[in-house]
Length: 239
Figure 1 (tube, rainbow, N blue to C red):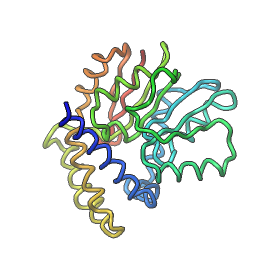
Figure 2: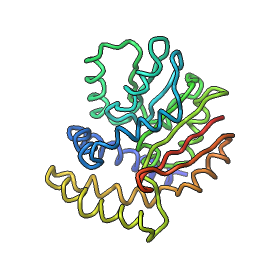
Figure 3: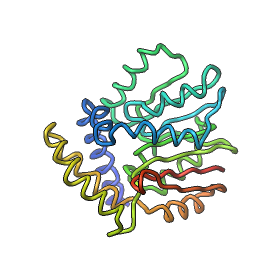
Figure 4: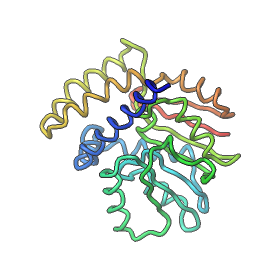
């Protein structure tokens, strides 16, 4: 209905505005807050998915393109990867990085993930790091990925793990976000943007729920594993 459509549009715009605002410090703060480990986690995601030379891949909610470039190294010289994001300023940073390596195998698209035309795409694989949690509807997002894949396609999602409430990993997550991430981001006048992370994790499904959603959507092989002391989660899906 009109009310729910307006709510979806509002969240889309809020997320887009948030990422445009933090774009200039995005890579620096990601590396600082994860102690550089986010690069290892993204590599772990690809180790599980095994992109191959000649395949066609997409990195959805690609941000500044970290994962896009990792995929690119796996699928060249005969494959390609498309980085897609709805936040223009953060995508512009990815494009600038791309020019430095003078590649022909990476394409960039400014678009909301949920608006991608399924009739025009047929990917061998799809990745999303720290993006699924920010979509207006996780199930709709996973369904979109299912429809964008070819018949033997596979997909992987890396994001914060939504731990059971009051568990040690959940408490650590809260303390780290509230007393380290937010205060440091305040130095860069971005505290409001980073306060959003804790709220978004609460609204994000737990691992077993993500498995249920993936089954409902139609994926045949599903695996969810946690890494870094249950702080992060990786969802691997195959048709």
